[in-house]
Image 1 (cartoon, rainbow, N blue to C red):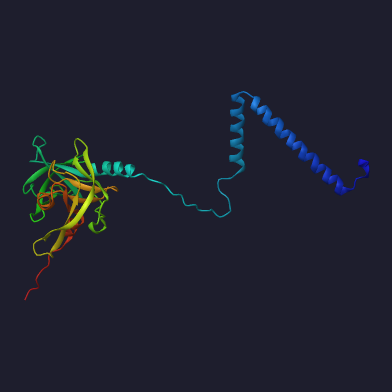
Image 2 (image 1 turned 180 degrees about the vertical axis):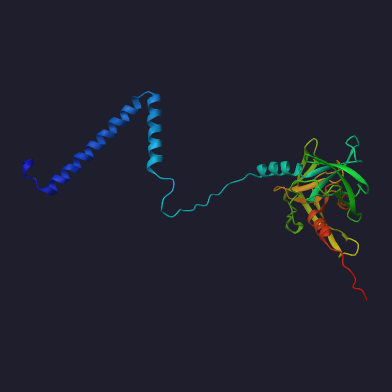
Length: 275
C-alpha cells in the first residue's frame, strides 16, 4: 500500500505506532547508558529526577486529604524503661534531717504537685528531700499509722516542682500485670515483678472526714531495701507505696494502693452544723 493513499485515521494510527516504538527504544537505550555510566553521573541524574518530582508534584493540592491510620507496635521493654526513667525524677530521697550529710531514711513519691507520700517511719519534723534537681525542706503534715503512710509538704510555697505521678486506679490493677519497684534513686536500682493479689488492708481517715477503705497490692517483688518504695506499672503510673503496715499484712512485696492514698488525702472533713 502506498503511504500517500492512507486516510487520516490510518495516518494517526501509524503516528501512534511510530511514537510507541520510539519510546520503547529510547527507554532501552537510556537504561543501558545508565547502567554503564559512572556512579557520580547516576547520583546526579537521580537528584535531578527527585528535584523535578518535587517541583511537579505540589505539596498541597485541592483534592481532599485522605487520612490513614497507622498502627505502631510498642514493645513492653520500651514501655518499662521509659516508665522507670520518668519515675526516677518523681521519686524523692528523704534525709534524716535538713542536711544532706544525714542518712537517707526513706523514699517518697510525689502524688500531687509538691505533696509527697512515704513510710510512717518518717513520723515528724523537718526533712530535706532531694526530688529530681530540687533540694527542699519538707515537713510531715499528716500520719496515717493504720496504713503506715506519712505525708510531706514543702516549707516554701515558692518552690516549683515537676509533674507528679499519675495515680493508677487500684480497681484496674490486674493479676499478673507487670510492675516495677523503684528501690534506689541515687543508684538507679529497680526490681521488676508482677501483681500477685489485691486485698483489703485497713480503714483510714482524716480527723472528721469519711473513712476510706484502703487496699494492698501484693506482688512477687522484694521491696525491703528502704521504706517508702514506689511501685509503678509499665506506663509509669503510681500503683502503690511500700510501708511497714503493708509489709506486716502481706510481706516485703506488698504495697499500699496509691489510688486509695489519693482518695484519703482528697477527702474533706465533715463539719457538724451548729445547734
